[in-house]
Image 1 (tube, rainbow, N blue to C red):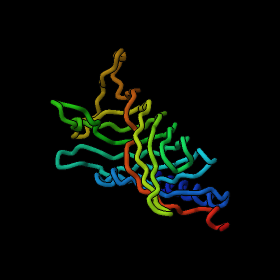
Image 2: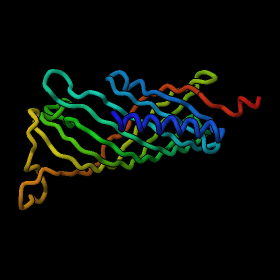
Image 3: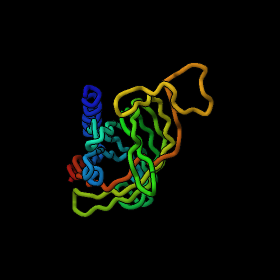
Image 4: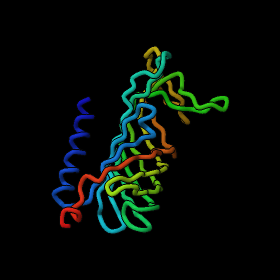
Length: 210
């Protein structure tokens, strides 16, 4: 909870900084994640006529999912540079992002053609470096929709546990260690963001000048 408060404070400081530097700023919330109880606020700041910078949090507050004890607790802090083909906050864009994460969760997996959660959970942290594309559509003077999809190279380090809390002292590795060691790691390409966010223009220096 303390780390979450620090990240929220950081977002607030960025917004205040944007107001001081007179950068056009949109505040957003991912409606797709909200449907499954995941909180994903973001702020997008204008850098130039065709580029922006976005900072965001992804927070899943669920210590347990359902009645089977599977975990889905994680937090992600991500920064992203966006390059628009037409102009900022209007139309198609490509983006590069970098983020860090902490998690206590059961890993999703496909089994028998269905997406399920593993009958275990992992606790650890990681980093990600990714690419994304999306489209922004302004439907009111101060409102927009932002649809996007991204993939990232994710590196993570963690301990594995059974659902009753017993640590896995011999996790699967390509080369088994000489002695039991619960510390494990992995690196793979995975989707790191998908959504449909609604955005509100909260700072527009050009509008004030008018």
